[in-house]
Length: 174
Image 1 (cartoon, rainbow, N blue to C red):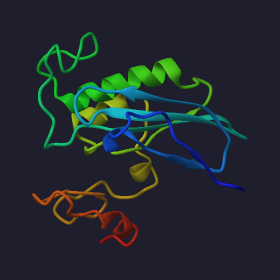
Image 2 (cartoon, rainbow, N blue to C red):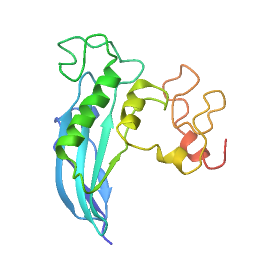
Image 3 (spheres, rainbow, N blue to C red):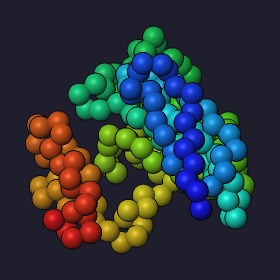
Image 4 (cartoon, rainbow, N blue to C red):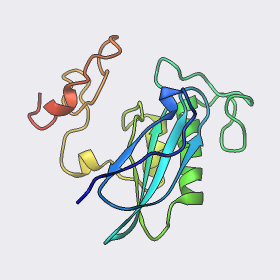
């Protein structure tokens, strides 16, 4: 089948707020949602499939280098209270967007730059909402920061781009 590129409207000139979903399925709807902080946003694309609608949500959540505590200006209430880390606020905002836009009878996939590991509040927020870590559900090991096995990026040292090749090493275990 032909591949299709679905490119939600994004903020012109801001590379952090642009993204693509590549699919061989027909796109039905798309949007972009701003999230608290910088970078903070997600693309949403719905495609039609034999299984029914599939909603893809691809966020870019705050990294550890840019994850200040919320205040009433940076993370507006009611979803986020002052003192909450921005990344967790973004996860709450993302879930509110999904609740309002994703098809409740369809499949919703959140996959993007989450900048977190399973035991962090931003990821726990998504898991508590019923999402599943498909990597570990498939029987793969959780990220081991000391070896890098099961990690995708930037774990275990201060080099921002270190570990970008770890995803290809996941299957080999190192």
